[in-house]
Image 1: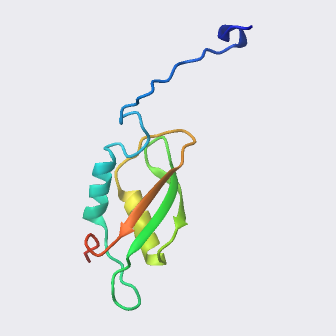
Image 2: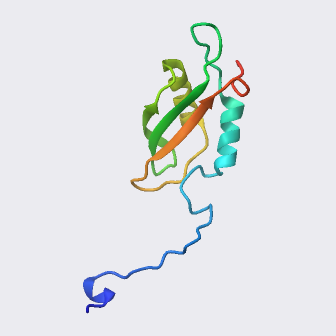
Image 3: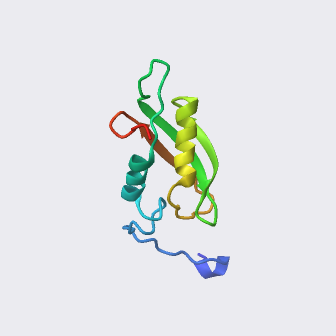
Length: 117
């Protein structure tokens, strides 16, 4: 049997419990990100004059400066809602950089948090 050092690498043990600081996601945590979305979302009126209800799912990577890049719409609600979700993501809080990791975020459009601004 060969030892790990004989093949040019060492095997590191990964702790079974990770702190939330080491997990990928928004730099200031998911609770702060959700509060940002709730405070800054603009409602989008549908053809009948009511607000859209549903979610837009975005997939993206994070660059080394902690900003979203290569944003893709995974699930669309409407063109207007897609643009609003993209705006919220681009203007929002920074994200933890993780090379090669793609994030997926749901941005919900619902009557109680989507006031016209």
